[in-house]
Length: 154
Ligand SMILES: [Cu+2]
Image 1 (cartoon, rainbow, N blue to C red):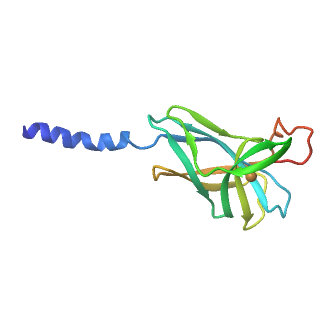
Image 2 (cartoon, rainbow, N blue to C red):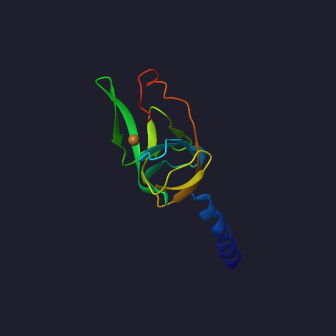
């Protein structure tokens, strides 16, 4: 009996490791913007390798006064952005933040963001976990939906 208890205790750390959220942030990047820009957009692919869904509920960065999750929607042919309070990534699934759709809205930069820079952004999830990723500032493709429509960048 004591042996069994000892075995169970030995297994406990493994169990808690297995319960860790298995979220991966692939290809995090920020679209380069002209000097003085007050708003930038960040993109990444959020991959949930875990067995439970997890939701992105917030983000922050020392380089920006405010970071929100936004979704671009077409309203009467005009692109508008809505804040997303909770973005679920299904178990074993992934959600893409990409031009023309979901994005991190990076507001009030504390200083200009230069192309080639890597900026840390901390993502917060509904299970209490946090994930910091280095977002590389680069030029990116125009959103397919907005191609030829002018200046919509998000
Ligand atoms: Cu936005």
